[in-house]
Length: 243
Image 1 (cartoon, one colour):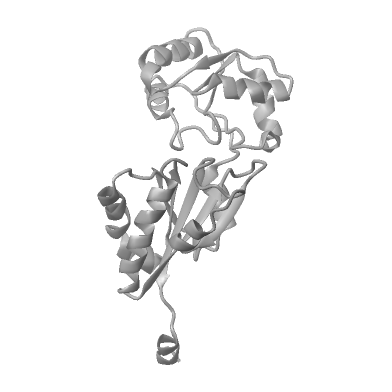
Image 2 (cartoon, rainbow, N blue to C red; image 1 turned 180 degrees about the vertical axis):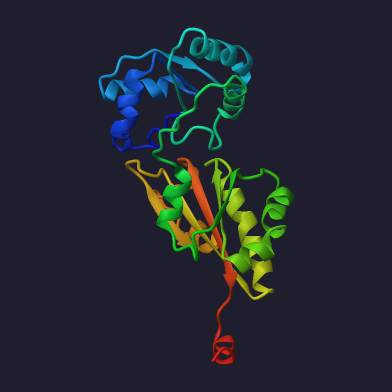
């Protein structure tokens, strides 16, 4: 299971390149993207397509190649670490069932990259993959865990499509106003096009982020990772009471 860059091809590790070189072939959810990486480093390697839709046939083929033909197969996602909101979990389940040795080659991840860019209150965070599309489901994702998130100072991390980002920020604007009534404040860290040429990082209220859109900072362009931070609102009265 080989992690690949989330954007900047220079982020691939030397170990990952060495391991790719020893593999008999790779499987990838997006072979065209993987081949660009291989071309950059002068590696000639067959890349087969693998997604949930062709799992049954591809899993049997790959595991037979490993178990019967003693091959070494590398699994990569389009970008980042395999299985993190990408295909691979079913393949891993099949691999363990057949006694296949699994070795992760660590590297880039949009989740940890985003966490490192924003002032989260602790080392704890919840990762929920892609955000729910419906407002009710999105709201429950946060409110059902609100007490835990605030008490333990846990950040919430998830991915969002550029086509839905404004809508999601709109959900957060409404939720933020509701949380204000509970003496809580909500802030959002937005990482866009991380590690790429036009990468951008903003930490603000949801409405603050919406107001920052310009010709050079388009919310509907580029993949986004959001980090939600909810904490008790500090005010002068609370400050005096705590002294």
